[in-house]
Image 1 (cartoon, one colour):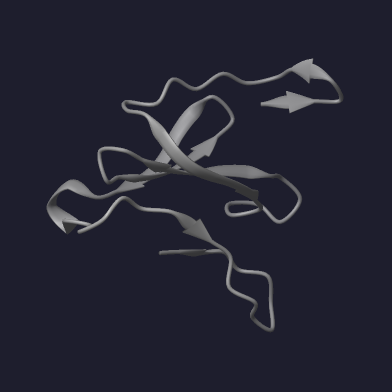
Image 2: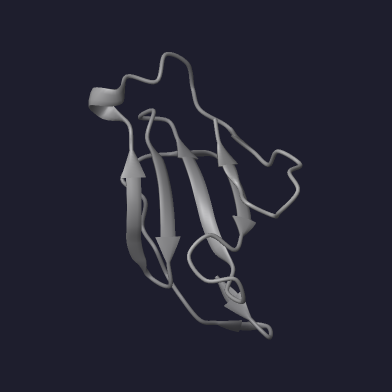
Length: 79
């Protein structure tokens, strides 16, 4: 992730990334990558660390993608 044109964070995903969105998930004033990966996991990254992942036992049936749904307040939806 780059901040003001400088490399600020690095994250190595466990598998190929199919889709990605950058949205404030954890803190309202900080942007977080949401990754939809080939291994059918959804991963949320905070800085250079994995903050949250879902998949595996959840058994996402198709390759996941990340979509933002318009709501009254800006909350990202992971589909």
